[in-house]
Image (cartoon, rainbow, N blue to C red; front, side):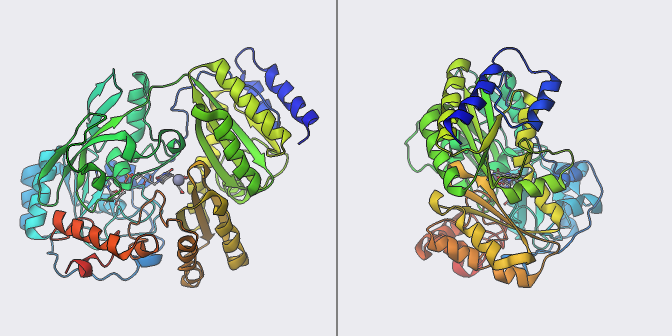
Length: 554
Ligand code: FAD
Ligand code: MLT
Ligand code: ZN
């Protein structure tokens, strides 16, 4: 884009400095492709929450869902039940009733079928029992009993996980923390929140917003996922580029171990170097080492000035350069840098009702969402404006629009956050969540598109600011020939390019026997030793994460 065109666009952008947008100007701006200044006072709850029917279903005694396919993909098929595990009997059920009460020991078929199947309806177990404890003591009693009886269990949160980790493989007992949803305290001087593991992320965000803070974590599943699930998957999400990993923001945890021991590591200090920092073992452990029952988390202050730009780029190199430019020019106010290709945009527009492109004149090759969050409106706008102007002049941006109100902002985010929902509507989705050096980021998407040809739709999107690519491959139904063309190719490619086969979703059941693509044998052995120390009967979330754990441990 030439300097003249760029200054024309920014002239339009400046024009909207005064006044709040009216609904009609909002309509106008999504159908045009010119800059407008964001004049809204943001609140951080504007993003769209994607519904997660399974999670709400089992709580609401909702209906059952037709299951498309049992456990399709990667390690998920044909896993033999570990004969060392006992089968549930009437005495077990009676015992659970004495500690939890009748209501929270669930054998109802509808509720069980919702809890047995994952969000994508791809992985399905056959558990006969769902337990809903209300306190850490109840979790402790459940686990103590299960451990002594060798009953396998699956910790479950909002059941929004994308790797089959949150549902049973066979008849494991499901322990869900939905009833442990209390906020324990908020230190308003330091922004430290202490809450139970079953709190829904969105509820925590709303609570904090009213108190002048925000959660350092935000993701499309926030309306259903639980903070205990977020910690157990070490979820990344949309604010990672600004606030970093949960390994940095989690200050303390309370965890119940497999034998029922309640491990109190619920510190609220920023600094504490006494001994090993064991809480980190549980962050990202996917329910394999203990159940996270309480959390202490550092929450950033809520900042009042927020801007969101929806940009189009001609090629991936421009996206990459734009990221560097954004980091340089926006520095500390950059709060999200999200990426999607034209196929992702096309997918969302074709499958989600009411979604429209903010840049409708044509489909561009790549789209970037750049969000800034700061405390000085004028300063933030000046920075964003300078960044946009320079990037346009350098030809990194072909077109773009800046959200001018909260509705418009939500509609931009809806596109990016709606990709997962749109993918599952195609029929079958093979999901890969890769961490890659940014210069290698898009190569695998193109390779897979060439490799699969007309047989599948291939889309690439993700958290470019964190080097995290989501590669989704979709077909109308699950097919082992397609799977054989994808795997192990994707994993080998990632390993060859020094990436990780899981950036944020975890290994779960899907990648249970794939850890060696990203970790050395010595590291895996140490993980197995730790698992055996903390869970000698291997009752916690079996068959997941490291599939041959049983063999390694024995
Ligand atoms: P579940 O799915 O119930 O469980 C996930 C794993 O954690 C399982 O292994 C389970 O056994 C374990 N677990 C759950 N609760 C506990 C507990 N209290 N103690 C111990 N173990 C437990 N992920 C990202 O990282 N970034 C994203 O941007 C993102 N966006 C998403 C968008 C959509 C629309 C969807 C459907 C999912 C998305 N995810 C994302 C994946 C998922 O939402 C996250 O992994 C989330 O953190 C899972 O939380 P949950 O409560 O639903 O856990
Ligand atoms: C995302 O970033 O949208 C999530 O991780 C979910 C997904 O990839 O489907
Ligand atoms: Zn993601």
